[in-house]
Length: 139
Image 1: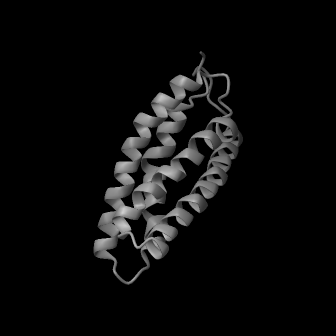
Image 2: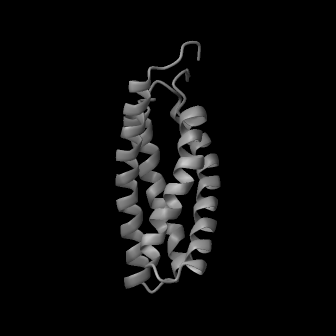
């Protein structure tokens, strides 16, 4: 990218990412809670379908709303998203397992928020911005 993007544009995009992430978190939380409380899954097992459901919301929300990357190849973006999201899913799952084993006084659903946020800030958002939905993407 030749010119530096204005701070306001970056802040607005990050705000849109938080909105999409909130929607994905609601889906994730709903699936996690259903699996733990109604289907009697163990928390680490329940985390897997919850993360997959949230990731689906993330892809379409980020492509259309956060990064407005419709001009890019959806196939390319989907392949990159899948590759990087597998890494994010693994990081989320490992972080969650660690938190559940160490912080026993907090409900497992609440710990999922902490782990997901850490992985979002440190890995998922940077990869989505810089690689998957980069703004200079041309088909």
